[in-house]
Image 1 (cartoon, rainbow, N blue to C red):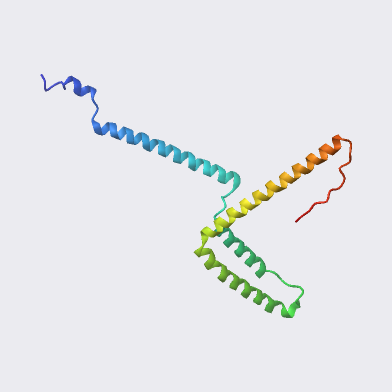
Image 2: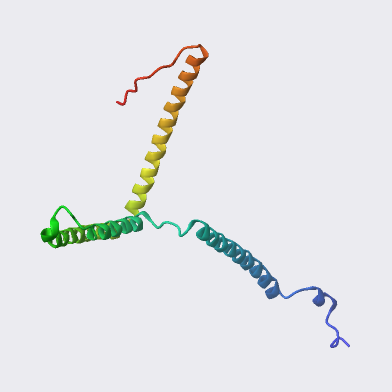
Length: 160
């Protein structure tokens, strides 16, 4: 008879491997759900705002390529029909030399351009802060003079 029925405590216990597998599956399910949500959010933003900008080095490379393309396509009416093709060839050579000089710098130092872009953003934020603070001082001065019934009139701005 003992061969037909398992012992009473064996039915209540799950194998250890099954418990570990369930825990691993739960962790994987969470990671998978987060990854899917992130991918969906990125896709939504891409459709709404377009592709995200690349690194500063990639953007500089695109700028150089676009400027080179525009300069190569310029027809100069000042040089006339005789010097036009020769001038265009000179422009193309100068553009190619500039690209050849810029490309190695971009490839060797891509992080530098990211840092420069971040520094430019910080400088812009500092400038905005200074301008906003000055505007607030000007508007307070005008308000206090108007409250007294005086005309604030023009104010000389010292740019030094």
